[in-house]
Image 1 (cartoon, rainbow, N blue to C red):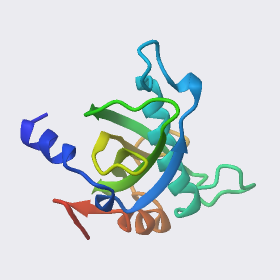
Image 2 (tube, rainbow, N blue to C red):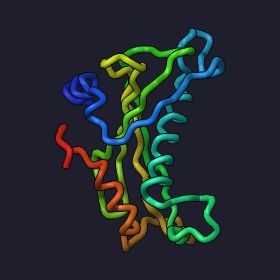
Image 3 (cartoon, rainbow, N blue to C red):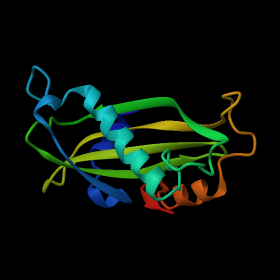
Length: 162
């Protein structure tokens, strides 16, 4: 990744993110070096992204007949850039935004902040591709309209909210 892009990520603040969620770390989130284990970050990203998909995109996996039943979102890539450590008993503030929205794909970015601090600790995320359930290939018709419209509300490009 170009150094310029890393430097831009390191300067992120809460206001750079559209959707927010709080996470209280747990004792077992720490690794043997007394900081959050790297696998926990993937869980944090998954949690805030899926919270948004359920609450704002109508993708509730527990509904009896979900409208999105013909499509599923599959992770195509993921990333995580670490700038500073956090650990138990920190309370974290997570921020979510969309940096790229294609016909059947979306790239999310999550910022991790320690409660009450302005400096971002970690920036990461992943790319979802909406696939048809029966053949697991990218949906030719693209993602469902209400999902796209909800994801557009998270869209940020070149540091500016669209």
